[in-house]
Length: 207
Figure: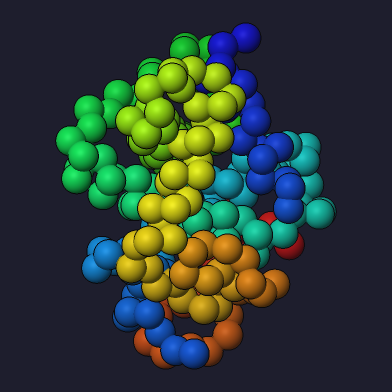
């Protein structure tokens, strides 16, 4: 089984582990670039579908707040990674999915396949950039777990060094670390385009 296939199949399993507005309509702002709330909704929708599939279609035990925190964290990390790649002139190539992987994703996501493919590509891109950061820092690291861990650490440091604001209702601090059991946007808070949980699409109502 390919590494790419393992990454796709591990998506659901990964997700099962369980003060005022930042900017009108924004979930976060990274170095002046807004991450819209709608982007978080789209990512959380994909993660929720993957989680439901991993649960055999049952929403029992799925924490929608955790999914939304994961969505924000991934989008923030991706934005930081893209900035680093641009600043350092990285050429980023994301490996293509195998036909078998795509067929499985079609079965899992149906009409939402494009959103799932976009998310997988975005997360793969973030991972590739992190690995390039690690190779640049230590030429002895070329492949394997050590490279991945070093890249994750360097990307985490770049994130900590960035100018990041995250809507406090996600329960994350500005280094994307969880500081509260939150993630719900049904609480009143400024001009953010929050939608009450009961009014969100059914796919987002994981708990």
